[in-house]
Amino acid sequence: MSNSDRPSTFRERHSPEERRRVVRAAFLRPMSLLVVVIGAVFFALTLAWWAIPLTFATYAALVFLAARDPLFWDYVLSGREARSGSNRLRASGARDVSPERRARWLPRGETRRKVEEALELHRRTMVAIEESGDVAQAVLGDVVPKLQGVADRLVDVAERREKVAGAIRDLRDHADAPQREGRNADLDELENELRTADAEIFQSIEKLSTLRARVVRVSVESGGAAQEAAARLNADLDEMNLRLDALRSTMSPSEPPDR
Image 1 (tube, rainbow, N blue to C red):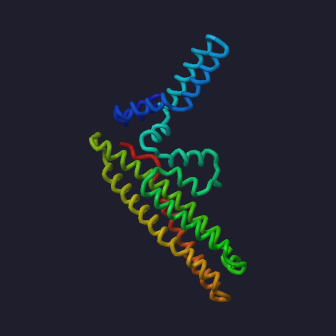
Image 2: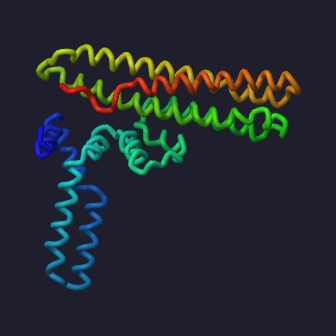
Image 3: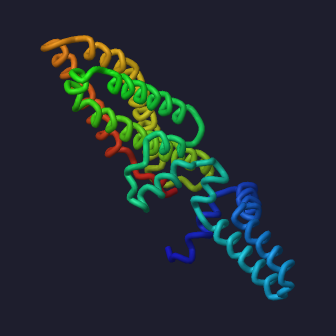
């Protein structure tokens, strides 16, 4: 397929109503309307006739580019902020963006709610560590980076889970398309990945819900008991990081299978 064929193929995946929604959103995009306002103000101040065609040409170009942008389609049709957010991360290489901010890029729904619940539990555990005594903080020194790793990996899994869900919707929405060999197998595999991701996110919430109490226990223990409790806590966080990392690496790519 040539590059010139790709935009039309992408648009053909959507219904006429969806195309109209995207085009309407492109015309009403704030950035595009701002160009019209600036052009009108400039013309009113200077009466330069050439400002009118220049303004409309710029406006038309912005509308045209938005209507051909797959990320804009995702945002308008399903609010898939996770995809655009992940692309911004990959493009900039900024891995210092907080898990809480990345979670806000997830589409609204059950997955985002669960991740935000997990991150709130993570925050409370971090506060408990900060409020523990100097001895407890020394014993829990390895817990902080491991706990941060759990938060980052959990959001990674949630992002991929939403992409898998989008691929499943894409396949189901085109159930009347010509069947290709292995399509049902692709759908079964994606649905299995979705269930696995949901189960892992749920289990992570359950485990995180006990961490704050375990940190408090370490802070009130002394000597070998505190070290033993901290060692068990570290081991559990290691296991969570390994499980999330393994799931993240085995989930399907973000692009849906070919139809």
